[in-house]
Image (tube, rainbow, N blue to C red; front, side, top):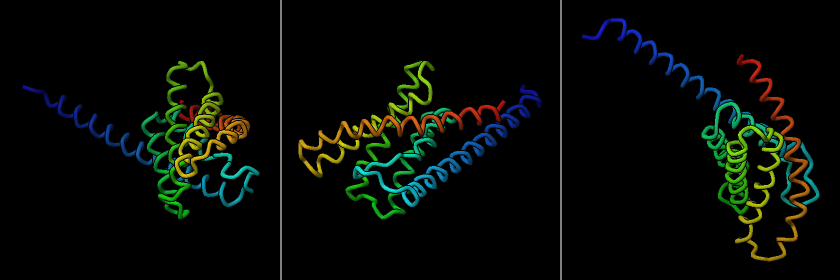
Length: 187
């Protein structure tokens, strides 16, 4: 016969699990709102770079932070949701610009997660961010090729790499500072 204490313990554990689930959902919603806001501000405020289609990708600092604080699944969900919602709000949903953006988001998030996992903490968030930026640019170029099948696109790749490194460094440095600050508040 089960004791009354075991029933209370289960209910208490269920309440704690529900509370943590609600907290996680709330943090996820806040991170998504932040990623969308940073994405929109980058588009609205920063002048375009001299190479067409190139941006700093500041919303990736949010994805990097989420990868380190909440885990891969949440980071991937926010990354994909940001692309879908951001493109919907900007009027590019399912247009030509949507597909390279989606490819870049998927590939960079997967790459950052893989580098973080397989490096076993030997690569800092800055290095993880740079690898994500490089993967992002490669996959964007691959995704745009079906729309503009021209081998000349490959000449674009060195310029994309040159810009990916400082962009990845910037988002990685800011992301690392955020990660450290969030870790300090949790202890």
